[in-house]
Amino acid sequence: MVTKHYLSALIVCISLNLISCSSESDSLEDNETNLFDENSTDTPTHGEPEPETTDTESVLSCLKTLGTNYVVFDAEATESPLDQWKLITKGDSDYLDKESLGPINETHLEFTGNNQGSGPVTSPLDYIFTAPSTGEYKLLMRLYQRLEGAEEDKSNDVYIKMEGNFTSATDKYTTEDLQTDLKFFGRGVDQWGAVYSGDGGEAHNKSAILYNLIEGEEYTLTMSGRSQKANIDYILLYDTKDISITTGANKDLAELNDAQYRPDWDCNQ
Ligand SMILES: [Ca+2]
Image 1 (cartoon, rainbow, N blue to C red):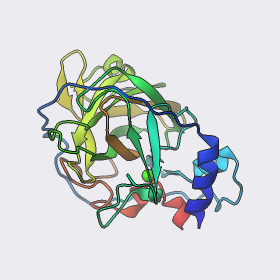
Image 2 (cartoon, rainbow, N blue to C red):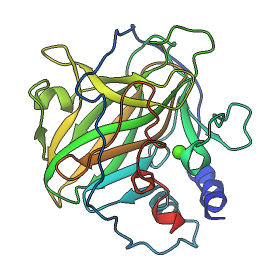
Image 3 (cartoon, rainbow, N blue to C red):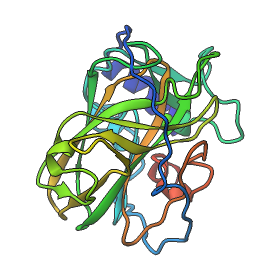
């Protein structure tokens, strides 16, 4: 199966290192992103044939889906060294598949640095993409907090920053805030849930992350480690004028939304 094929190649392509770090707690509650549901009118593109080669480019293309108005990356769909991120796959003892819908592509990344509370920015992973449409793009991730007895606000965040020709699409954050490593947190308390709220910036807001992106421009989203034992399955950026996504605390991003917004969409067609 395709999954096995590119996974084995990916492991060769990406070097793994393990280490750690941490973050203070947050009393979450992101009212903006709590729940909205709808159908969408977009359609994914199907420009990529089923990959048969094992070169890095093909492997990476199988781990992301580029829609007409969204982009979704498997967490390991990066050419950056994983450093303190650990790639966990089916069969590993720490594989998080207790639920009906396990990790997409049978993979997830666990941050092993810092501590479960917080820590400095480390192990940056770059995700490079070309915006498929001009619009306001929201950022979400599928998160699992491997708490192992810790409080519910632990192991629940990463840092994010964006590079490229964009502006902030929310009055809660300046463009500069979004160009600089910003805490991005959510809830998936011993289950798959979501990361959906920034925290910080000049005004120290807790609010959704929204970017004004321009069709055809290339962007680099960087995710860095913050709290240990935060597990990220995949990363979704979507144009909010066309698409509504159900998200919020302990709401499984994958299970509650259409399969086309998962990174394995193209490879499973
Ligand atoms: Ca995955």
